[in-house]
Amino acid sequence: MSEINFIVEGMKCGHCASAVEKALKNLQGVESVKVELDEGIARVELENKETDLGRFKQAVKEAGYKIVGTK
Ligand SMILES: [Cu+2]
Image 1 (tube, helix red, strand yellow):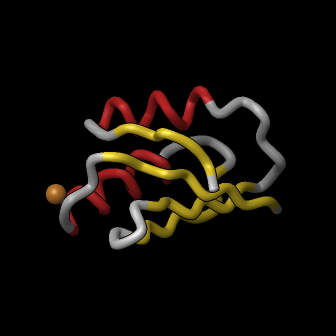
Image 2: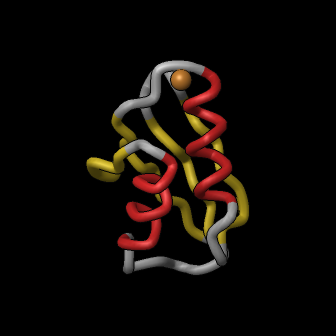
């Protein structure tokens, strides 16, 4: 199990948070997602260590938001 904290740009309310949460949860290997709206962070727990972050960025982009980094 490993964890990545994504810095997500563009989330303004609970709807945004749940849209990002849903987009990330749908990805393979994702155990859980918790979005901290105030901090603009999505905490993602993964089954395995992940080095390719492209698919996370893509999923969040498709939902209308942007991953700008990790924390
Ligand atoms: Cu919103």
